[in-house]
Structure formats: structure tokens, C-alpha cells
Figure 1 (cartoon, rainbow, N blue to C red):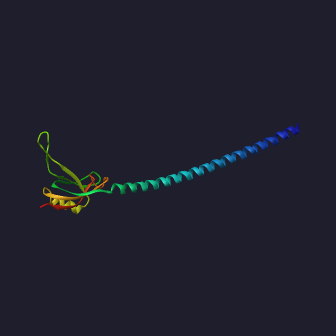
Figure 2: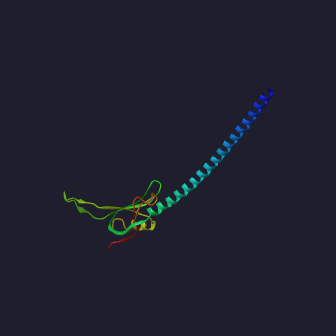
Figure 3: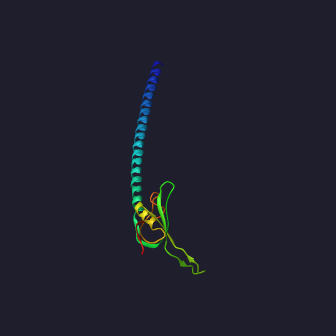
Length: 160
């Protein structure tokens, strides 16, 4: 009987060692998995931030791309500095009227624009109510700090 008990104790110790080895292997595997997951998430975060920054810069470049340039002539009827957070210079130009074909009424045709340069805005203030030629650039999309419109006046001439 003693040998059976000894054999049982040996098997018990052997199983105990195997279980401890298995637990150690599982714990080591979990540690490696956690380490790999942390590295993956760190890379994902870094690449995501880089992609976000590059995408944001690309969007800003695309938004400020000059879509068209031109000159508009008319009577300067309104100028203002407005905005809740970003104060911008805004204006309206009366391009002239045209007759409504149905009733024969004269319909006004106004054009709204933004001014990015304070000097140009001050020159426009002096010419308010007069006929002017406004040189402008139309960009793809104006950001909130640039102005309310996509049309930006950069030069003004008084029409004689």
C-alpha cells in the first residue's frame, strides 16, 4: 500500500508541475499578446494622427485653391465687419437691375463678397455708394476665419 501511496504522490506532484508549467505558458502567452496589442494600437494611433494631419493640411490647401478670378463692376452698397468669433470684412455690390419678364418690375442683382486685407477694406469704405470695379478671387471653400463668402476682393478701382 505504501508504494501505491508513493506512486499517487509522485503522479500528484508530476501533475502539479505540469499544471504550473501550463499556467506559466498561458501567462507568458497573455503577456506577449498584450504587448503585441499595445504595439499595434500605438502604431495605429500614430499612423491615424499622421493621416489626420496630412488630410487636414490637404483639405486646407484644396479649400484655398483659386477656382476663378475676375472683375465685377457695380455700386458699392454695403460694408461691414462681422462675426461672432472670427471678425471678417464683408460687403455687397449692386451689379445693376434687370426687368422681370412676367410683370415688368426691376429686380436687383447684388453680389456678396469678403475682404481679407484691412487696407482694401478701408479703401472700400471711402468709396461706399460709388461705382467701383472689384478684382476678386473665388476659392473652393472659405474657412470660418476667412469670411462668409468664397469671393475675396483683393483690389478696388473707382470707375469714372
